[in-house]
Length: 288
Image 1: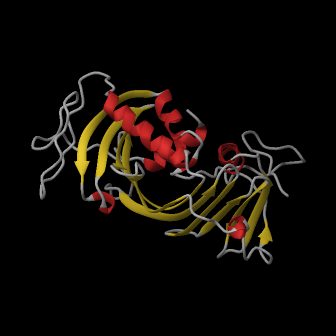
Image 2: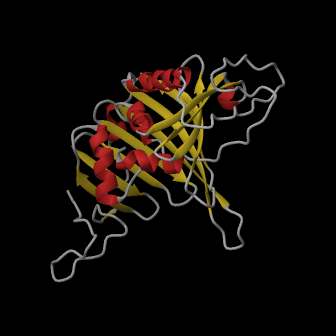
Image 3: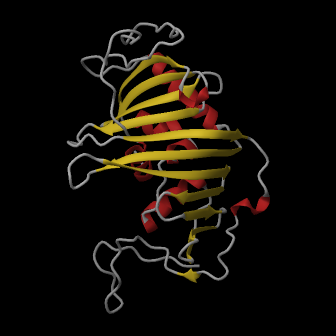
């Protein structure tokens, strides 16, 4: 699994709901569509590792739909829990407006909560811009979106919780560590449309995802690390999907950076060099 794929699962994560009766499906059985006004409960997972073909096919169908998009726009609202001093976790939320053009253009505008940030990639360079602080970092970049995302993560610890939706093969990272997958049923609540619900586990992360029944676009995902003793929950909601729409040529060119202060494109945890020698564990900054 790639570095940025693991990072996505962390930001993408949330806990599994308790198994219940009612409309919950037992793995291996087909789930009847829920009746109006009923609640869909998570099916009880099998005792040992088990992978249902129907669940896998839904994950693959969503992957194919995303991979086939020439251009893509969507909104990602990510909510994640962090421990608090009193004990119960606190919930934090970010929103990102994502625009992509394959194979080599990406823009991510994150207005908040927290410090606003903007990221631009045009096939040759990548730019990280903090508009409020008027700080900008520029670095050379590889020629594909996948490689640029990995480079941004390595060089500057930049990652996005929706990375696995925009890489060239979204299913690949799931498949590499897939140990459990089962179909739960349908929901008519999430995303304002009918969705198929799948639960799966990969690389020790348990994920529940809602996939559009008609368009196969993801609408929500929740997951949790199996080895996280705190059981911190994380969730991503996806909306405002626009597939294969026209994107203006200047969409991937940063604006408002002319008067910004240039800073190194480097990891925030990198220590400054001493006597021209980089400290252990630090990464050399890459500037334009």
